[in-house]
Length: 489
Image 1 (cartoon, rainbow, N blue to C red):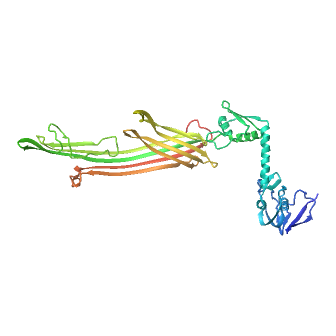
Image 2: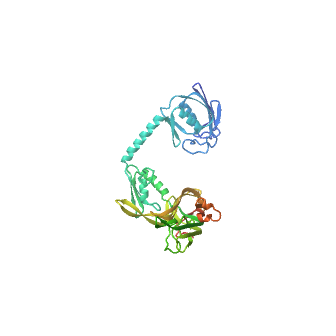
Image 3: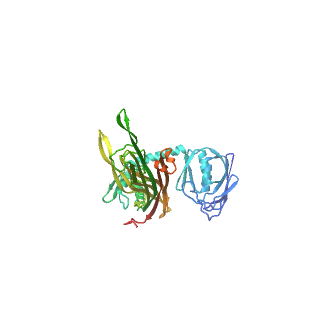
């Protein structure tokens, strides 16, 4: 046996010449020497000792050596033979590969150079082992279509085999739906063939699949990767609400009345000026020209304290009523909520606690019905563990509370956060915060009289309120190896 260590290819004007030199008998005739240079046109290129002919053709390779080409009007099949000798592949062109090509490439990876030549002539290649098929694109598409039609005809008459699998972690009913492409929310198609069928046994969590042998092998490999334990996550949320409130209100009611006897045409009459007067009344007499009582000082639980004085004569036809009302209220509040829930990776979890408030709704024809609305603390989260160990969370947190009473029922104070966040395992992140500060200084007065120094306070009302509120939401996910029997403190 013998091989050729050095060989050259010269192309010009459509003439191809070969010069061959004998090499050592120690080399095999099927493997070119690692140091053999390839002379293409007038440029020498070495394939290198580690060149892999499968690179760039669907088979991974660590090396992709460059090649230089300089040809004018060379036959396509001859140029493909150059690539075959350089790469070590067996190149098989079909009868449709005809024509000539001119190419000039310098130091281009040989896989890229081959693709450029094929694309310029509308050709495609397919690698089967160490054989590289080259054919026109339309011819290859027609060939593949015929192969698919033949395979479909063979599948239509081939006998079906049965595969039984006992799943350890996944639910057989859910997996059966996915195999048939009918799972809720699934975007995948049918995994079984047209003649295939699947039966799920929920008591023993088994699958019985009837299909073609080749399809059963693929399904068995896929189910082995699908039926794995799912990691679990403990998710803890802390919702902190702080409130600081101070209010002060001062008001007054002032009334005066005067009744003067008056005779008109011999008849006795009374001229009354000011508020209405009741002679038989004792204490504070009703009727006020100034009615500006104190407000609620920013709260609704207590009414203002009052102090009233009435001055009137013995005949009760002259009187002055003065009522002073005042209220000062302060409050500090802090609410800490800690909902916690354990769920599997990429599985939605929901935990809530609260109150349902009744209210009336009209159903038609004057008929009313009682409905309920929730005022809850709710944590809804869907976790996903990333390859680096962190956790991506889709979080929806509601913090509702019962508000003030209205003619239609109780109002509901709502605080809502919905977001997606990435957190390290065991780390804590602040999802959101609301800081609110309110300063109000309201004053109502009688124009002119309310501005009189000293006595002006008898003709006006003052209400001052300061309030600070803050809401913070913290979230801490912890990946657990096994499902915990109890939640940690």
